[in-house]
Image (cartoon, rainbow, N blue to C red; front, side, top):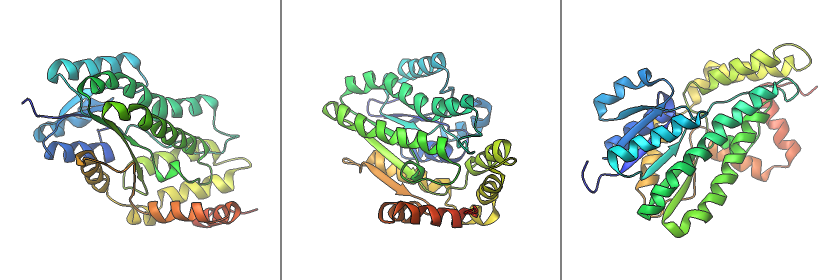
Length: 279
């Protein structure tokens, strides 16, 4: 550590966007702590100078211990990237409330709690950047994605309010809205919808959505996670970063169409895209 070395904490760093972001920030000269539940999946990051750290965003003691470890070892936290999250799809009627609550625990409350823990240190420094990974799904809706979209809409709202609150302390809040990205996310979401909505009254919709999420064509069109990593590197390095970055396959055009089309026209478009029957 030198007096000018900046420190970044990236959650959900065992694969996908989190891993790509950790590598980009390390390459940019940050001391990077890569956080995830399964530390063994991050051993390979050590060769890039990255420090794996055990952290479960749904377990408060692990968050407190993780932040304290970083402060003890480096004395500061300059960048927090709240990336940990997953997609839980299924009809509202089918998804158990325990699953809905867990989706919020991971995607929203974990990010909010970690933000609470790093803010006193950033305020003390009079500087810092908090990067919240939402999704184009924080601006639009897709069939059977109610609980996932609810978490991302919530994280967008929290980010907007937080940005105003922390501005007097020299802290920036940046929202990243990825489109389709080649990660484990789509496969997990497909498995979730099959588990709860592949039978019963919502089966035609559930199977169509699952097939759409896991299709080979969807994966081929999706952008690499490195694109998001590069975007985050650019954002945290900017003196005046934008408040939002919509990047990756489909992000900008789908958000635009959602904003300009009448609701029912957008609904019909989403049904066509995902193959969901209209009746």
